[in-house]
Length: 456
View 1 (cartoon, helix red, strand yellow):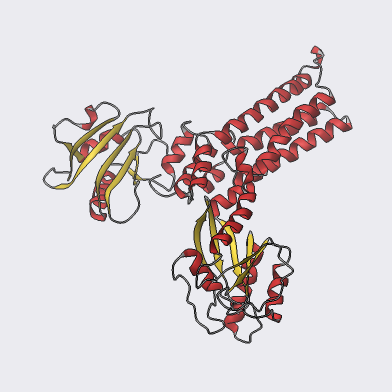
View 2 (cartoon, rainbow, N blue to C red; view 1 turned 90 degrees about the horizontal axis):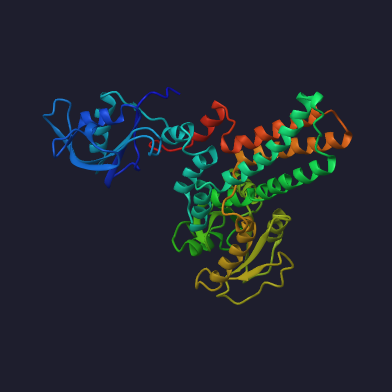
């Protein structure tokens, strides 16, 4: 990355709004902003003190045309988001004011920022570590209060502190082992097998606790996968509409109306629930309906919980029994629908959790939400121990660290040379370093920051 470039980008969402912000960062940020922004006082932005706000106008290069009325904030390094000089021009939030102002800034020598490049510079300049940088987008994308709290705890360094503590423990062990290897004439005493096991046991327990938050992290970031499944005409789409309190899915009396998987989000007790309305499971010669059933079965496999919808006004048929079979051992809730009609359905042996509802009257929907929340909250229990949850990248690094530490214990138990112990301790340190960016590659940075929005 050409670190000396001055970069710019629109940091507010696309579309119309009251305010739109253009962020400029780099060595020439103040100079470039001063060349396109004229303060009301006539004083150049280049003369402004740090962390001051100025009223004025964005003007054309020849000064003859006023592009927009705006405010400019000047923030000088190092007390800025990127630890570089930063200027933010607050324009009116329309496409034209922002596009024309951005073009002026680029025309004066700034470069359009890549996705996540401002945060990438914050990492490279040491203001945040890699796990904190990742948390920035988790904060932006958080759908519920619980997700926001978890992301904010990681942004504030909750995960970073724990990883650094583990690395300090391993560094002490590695230093003693490597000293004994490098200076055999000093007769430095190696850590005994028992001491080594006790020290690594603490580290391994912490790693296992962090790995236990993988499911919680996925749920907070992607939503708690809830698949609504059943045979045709049992009220799956009606249930989706009732839970969402909107007419999202088409509802008719014709079997096979739903041909594809519909996906929507709702919030239940702070947990983002990704709810999927699926095609009815039945045998059909219709090629399109067959594809719908295939997608339904895929949704069942990927879901965290399955809502098995049954028609309470009739007994189970072969299609209903197939639905129960396809759910297998997946966590499931039986939803006995059509409670507004006379009950004809006989006792259902499984699943154990059963809720009777009427999508028409709303009966039982509150109870169903509580049942879904109960399953979802049990999967996010690890957040009670610490406020954050790891992501897939962290999981891979932590599993590599755990594997290396297990090799250390095996080498020590087998009485192998200390060089093997030192090598695996270093590998564990490097793996833990990947989480916070103490060790990283350009490929890792690209994978992380390419997922960011431009302007952040």
